[in-house]
Amino acid sequence: MPMNYTRRRTYKRRTTNYRKTNWPSYQKNRSNPKMRSGVNWQYGPVRTNLQNKINAYRTLYAQCNVTGPYKPSPTTINKFANYVNKGYMLHKISGTKIAKWDKNHNPSWTVNWATKCLKAKYGAAIKALFPTGNGRTYMVATSPTWKGKPFKFPTR
Image (tube, rainbow, N blue to C red; front, side, top):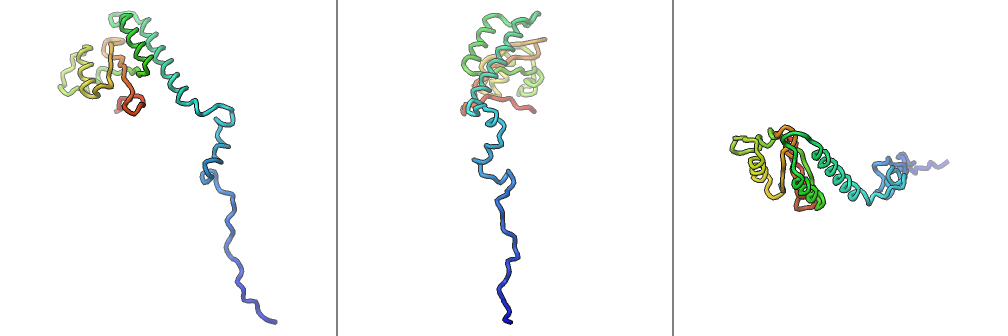
């Protein structure tokens, strides 16, 4: 009887059962919970922009109800509301952070000192500010960056 010298296949065939991370991008959308729930993902940036504006208006409304020597005037609130209408962001910054960014190391805790310090550090992104609370925290209006993204202060 002649011997058959043909070699048998000893390797395993690759199947199409890849993990989800190896799937092509068009198949990943099937498992996306946003797509399954019927929410259109294209409205995400619009939704976040509107949420930021609502939060800014809530912050300004809270500043209207403050009692004490650092209550902003109605013209200041109106000016900041117009900044929010234009798409600027509101940030609450403590005076100690501003003093840390100050190059002269001479904190005087006035609005002019804080404005000069922030404009020297961040330039034209700083539009306006007013004191809140005990006078050592400031509400700052910042314009978007040149790429159109919201301005963010460093966290450290």
